[in-house]
Amino acid sequence: FGAGSMTMLRMHLDYELWQEHGTLAIGAGFGYGWIDGNARNEAGDKTDDKVGFNLMPLQLSLVYRWDWAAVEHGVPLVPYGKVGLTGAIWWATDAKDNISNARVGDAGREGQGLTLGWHAAVGVMFLLDVFSESMAIGFDNESGVNNSFIFVEFQHTSLDDFGSGDSLVL
Image 1 (cartoon, rainbow, N blue to C red):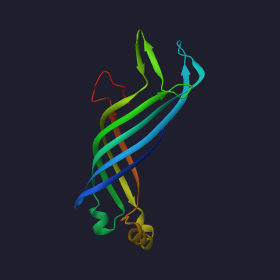
Image 2 (cartoon, rainbow, N blue to C red):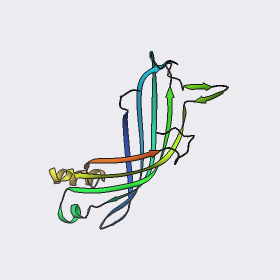
Image 3 (cartoon, one colour):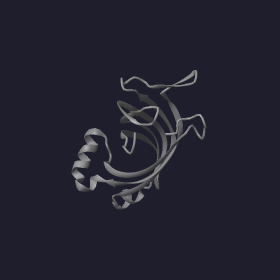
Image 4 (cartoon, one colour):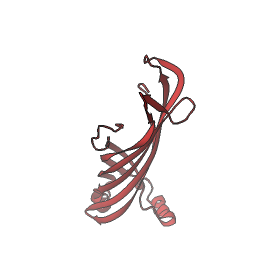
C-alpha cells in the first residue's frame, strides 16, 4: 500500500468502577479501518488492479483518569492512561472486492483472520464544559452526559499474537 495511511474510525465507551483521587474505569472499544492500493505482479511491479486491506480492532481496557484537579479545583485538563487487550479482525480484498488468497506450492492461504495482542496509551483530555457551564448542566439533565471532553492520545498497540511466528503482524 506504499506510503499511504489507513483511515480508521473508532469509538470507546467505559464504565466507572471507582472515584476517589481519580477515576478507575473498565472500557471497550471498536474500530474500523481501511486502505486501498494497487496490486503487484510476480516481478513486484504495480498493476492497475485495485486491492484493499480492512481492519476491525476490538479492545478491552482498564483506564485511570487523574481528574481530581478538575473536580476539586476546576482545572480543565485531565491526564489519563489505559492498558488492555486487543483483538483485530482483518481481511484483504482483491480487484473484485472478494477475500484474497495466495497459493504457496500446494497450500493455499486465505486473506483473512484474527490477530491478538495488547495496547497501552497515555493522553490528556480538555473539559469542554468550561466554555458554557449552563449548556453542560442542561446536557447532563437532558441526556445524562456528565461532562464533555476533547482529547489527544498516544497509543501503542502490539498485534502479533503475543510473539507468534505464524501471525500477521499488524
